[in-house]
Length: 238
Image (cartoon, rainbow, N blue to C red; front, side, top):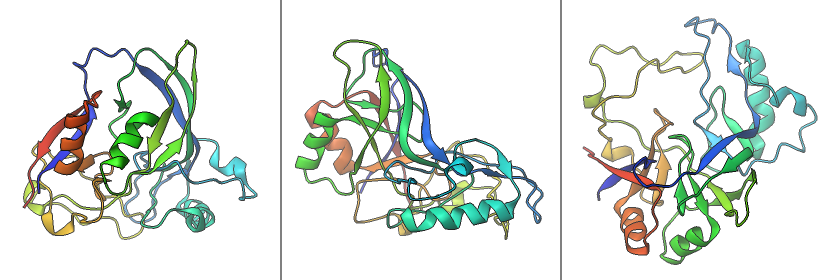
């Protein structure tokens, strides 16, 4: 099985632009008591999650770092609402993507490396091809133009990891309390074949969640159907 990393296609000629954030988010961590890091990343996103049943919605509306005890308390409020297979990290985005959009878009669009948007018609074509694990979630994007597309955000679960051979040999283990990895994305990415899923054609890496990966089945279907707007970069596995 071949695998591909999905990124924005800057040479596509499309002019689409999205300025948006997810409706809710977890805070970052302030001065972890073990590794002392203040950090948060927004690359794990769960647009299907509805936090309306949570009483303290205001706690999820502002990007900020919090002591780890507060972060962990908020995680426990969110956890029962997550889709199966989801995992949380500081700064995780929740709920629909909300904001403004303009320009001309392709069937697929990746405004950031960790988001993948798809027009409804394109998603229906991919699902009709029998691709596994494709879940489109509504967005709250405001288009100031006529004939605006209907974009859904694909909810991409974290699974699969990088192979140790592409990581520094003297790397430290993740923090025992906040689980911060503390590594930059390798220039020459190598996937650990033993960790890759066999039940879905689209996923994000667990250890580098800003990386979206698809199988050759997903790639071939997009090529055959003429679904452009993103680039597919081959990624080796071992």
